[in-house]
Image 1: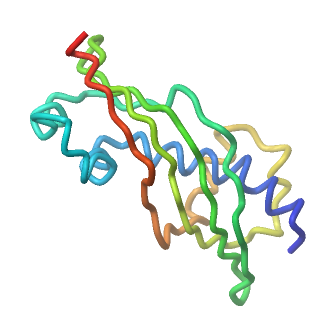
Image 2 (image 1 turned 180 degrees about the vertical axis):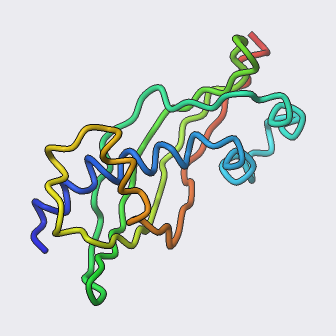
Length: 144
């Protein structure tokens, strides 16, 4: 598969699927692991009702390989995330998502001409092989 098609796949389907995964509250303990200066983060996570990426770059493809009829794509996506309890902002997180995704049917669809709903309907074609967070920093907004 060509680099251009992989980039389109990353900027469409993988952007939506990764965003949806990162915004899951269950990802917060993984994301915040190792941040020693954040006091009481377990309590903050237990109060969190919403997690949202409010700014991100498009995923950058670091590498890709064909594995049979699938494509393994390694990518990175810097992002800023806010967590909320109802309407009160709790945390502001800066991180880079590092993901390895195995994508089925990568060459079958015209990813560039799909809307968000169509893309999310294809999320079953994406399998996370690895999902990590690097260079993570967190601001406790409650302290301000």
